[in-house]
Length: 489
Ligand code: AMP
Image 1 (tube, rainbow, N blue to C red):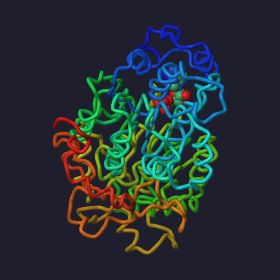
Image 2: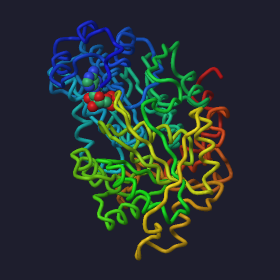
Image 3: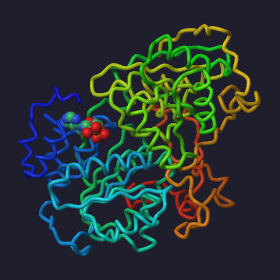
Image 4: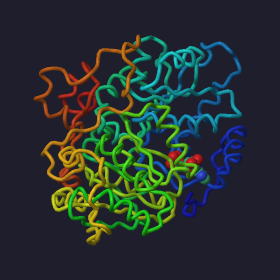
């Protein structure tokens, strides 16, 4: 953790002893810059708009002062009525929700404040018991939270603090209607904190619609790609050469560990299998894997048992993986903002990292969009691939490979479905009517392009499909964000 720019100490915030003790036990010596900025403001009860990525220590930046503010309510009663939800934290993916929960639980360890997490893609039943027991701090993904609201297993009428984490990704994943419903369930008088790694026009509109005179807290330049990350684009002859290129880069650059990003789930799975055949210790993480598989893969990667983690954007979002030396973009992302998120996986907390991107002649438009967003040109090299880089036998049908791995892309690429809801076991009693966009919705570009970045920021952003799920709630989304959320604009 880079704590060098902060002169304050944790003792300066006036945090209660049980919270300070937990922080000390976790080995946090000094507040990170975002913590130094955010903690006093959150303690004052002010709304916050935070520009910070995961990896900056932002979770403690909001969780510690929230716990401090809730200390007045801490009690040892076993009665659920004495533990209503007072702080609600929503996050776009299960992994991020789980990570926030682990942090909050650790910070609250010596207090009588209870926390819980709910996310989709897993059986709802065990969560029902946790909800019935009561918790002061609830961390949730939006869809599953609404499932609980519908089942009346959660009551949000006593929420005092509402946190929206990774707001940009939340919009990107089509959660806006869910967020609107959730906000409508909260008491009007409350504190709001919103964090986002990037700030498109849509995000600013969302912020204006529900934050009240927010204080801006910023630790990185807006939409700045990590400064300490060496970026390089490798031109390869064609899409078929990319697998060999990845293997070669991992070996030649002696990358101890790397996340390789693909644009599709099917591409991620296939690439991991091919790399394994090439003798690399690789595994894939994407939305078609079960929650258990994803957590197990992540754990193995964190332990260093897996060298190459092949991931889709959604699956990798917000993962707190310390000291990752490199990321490789097997596919250039459709959205330039995803590039910023991807390379933010490395070079964290002052460490240096490399972000290597593979591109073919058909990817020029994607590269242009990225360079426009990060306001710099990425150096390019041509990668000569040893052995010609042709795929091995059994790597899949050539047509399928071309479609999946990039070469000639359709102008409107399909997006991954909303991660937190897939896969859902068939016939689950808690399943609400969802599924693909309803008939008649398909014409409305809003559903295929959940958020629209300011033109100067994402000039070449490809429209993205809202994905499966959302069903009826999506119908409301064709009005402007601020109007949706009761804002002034
Ligand atoms: P976050 O950005 O909240 O996901 O935090 C990234 C990582 O930094 C997590 O593993 C935290 O436990 C850790 N961390 C947060 N604050 C500090 C701190 N003040 N000192 C050292 N590590 C920290």
